[in-house]
Image (cartoon, rainbow, N blue to C red):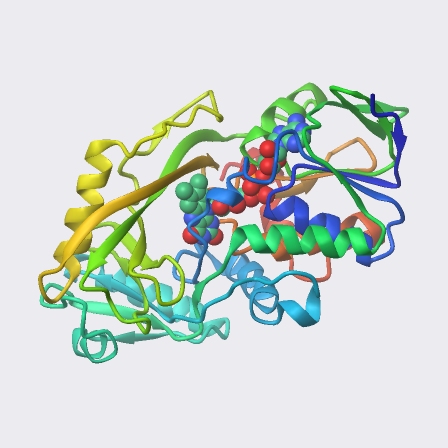
Length: 384
Ligand SMILES: Cc1cc2nc3c(=O)[nH]c(=O)nc-3n(C[C@H](O)[C@H](O)[C@H](O)COP(=O)(O)OP(=O)(O)OC[C@H]3O[C@@H](n4cnc5c(N)ncnc54)[C@H](O)[C@@H]3O)c2cc1C
């Protein structure tokens, strides 16, 4: 039976919750408690593709949030100090056909105006830097030399270890069933094992957030899907220098599973996406059509014939908002309750800054790391 008091409670140990836990502890929030309903492998974060790139940023606000997160991927030791980010600066090519050339140029111009290192390049540039990639159908591409991929599991473990060093505590296998309040203030949470008193509660429960916020009068405009990535083994192996590829022509993206690995991690965009109400219903074996699609798309993008064989797959939930941007907010009337939700399947790359922003907001009344006002829930009420 849990019977605790804490100065701050964080609910959910994905990237947003682990980052918030660490940041609250490092900003002097006092006794910080991180509650996870299951284990550290149960989150969307643990199943993430781990791609860190700017091309998917929909607007300036999301770009700035990604820029604010980048130092955590690149300078983890200095900023967090426990574990590592596993960041690999592979570079990223986004390949597009003629019909999407204008859109790509606009996206690159938007990113450049905000200081992101990216440029519009041609098929010959792709062929020069990645000769293993077939480019005869590529009309235009974007190049991001500083982008790459990171290791979600080591980052979550690192944030948690660093928070624990600062006096924070984590309880796994501890689902929060509801948030308590009195007199217009948050007073704590109720877990399956008992109540915990706390004047500050941050909900970072990912696709599970609606169930916690609805009883507090907050309706999240989200649809929940399951999506996935697959691992494929490529023979003969591709070189360790292969950049990350966003193949806008087939709607796929892939990268080395880990540096030097003969396996690629492949995302298939909307293929295999399915709406769900059971976020824990995992299929064990690779669905045949997904394995075949991953195999065929990767094989078709390679310059010379290679054998491509599906090996593993991983699926996880995405909570999609109407404008495909996340929600980062506080409760409109209850003092002391902050939350992020509606991850839109792209919030691993922004998770470190989301955690920092929530901690700064909760402790000093103002997020400093980035402007998060564009992510308020109220934007939907005003007709977005
Ligand atoms: C297959 C896949 C590939 C992806 N690829 C990328 C990518 O390449 N790049 C990118 O930027 N993003 C990607 N994403 C999206 C990214 O992984 C998520 O946006 C991000 O990890 C969400 O983090 P989170 O901390 O908000 O939520 P989560 O990681 O889902 O964490 C929420 C946690 O809260 C816990 N929880 C829920 N309810 C409760 C409760 N009542 N009590 C206690 N704990 C609770 C859950 O168990 C979970 O651990 C991908 C997502 C998927 C599924």
